[in-house]
Length: 332
Image (cartoon, rainbow, N blue to C red; front, side):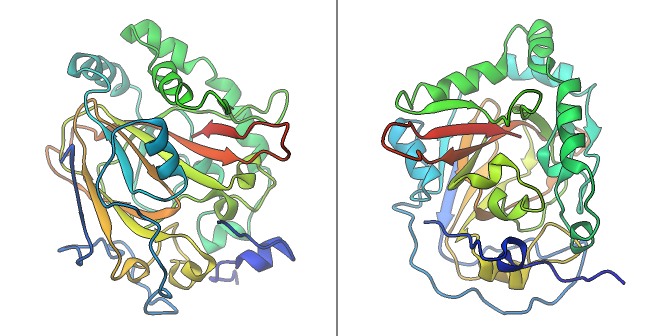
């Protein structure tokens, strides 16, 4: 019988403990009128509320894209960046026309369906408690799959007239001339894939994306980051489909709220916290810190049209000494 308990950080690391330091965007410290509370599974969390903590958010408003706002989001000091009109509606429509024909489901997801063009390292993670007990060659298979789609962005550029990956990457890299900015890699033949197109029309559970916990079944370089964020560039108009970002970063105490059958957490993990809400707009670029708990709500009308967004994680590898630059790595 497989255990239904998720491993703690201390059990997974031995003595190595993790430490860390509409555009409509609205924010509030009041409860959400409706919170996604495990609509596809019911379970009781071990605790009823997270321990109290002092918020790091300097503001509850979205910031425009700049060096300072990017660093504030990465360091957890502000909820999000929202840049309207990063690409035009015409460009978005070209990508939608090409991508809609290519969408396929994630190969592995312990939750509602997500469709994609590209590859997510998440597909190769242990997501449920059962997954943690059945690890084999997932890391090797991930890098083998990356090789198969290494030319995706060039292929899409030839079909749409724009290398969207290069456009977003360059915009962010230009903010950080004193950083090394690159796609994550672990040596020859072990470069990560960055820049996935995803269609999320159903809800997601409350969850976070924090590689130092999520990926510690193997020694991935993305486990060594000190901070993590994501960019999402929205390409289709939708009703509903909003993202809620909660002022509740992952800590080991959050494991008391983890659903053993999925990658999600019970809604009590964010009880009483401030939050910011993003309603996707065509051409809008948003960036937020994914260590914060967040959730996606379902598309409410016209659900046959994909809620299409272009995304990549970004993580900070601190400089080891005074001669090195800090490094910002990308992966999806």
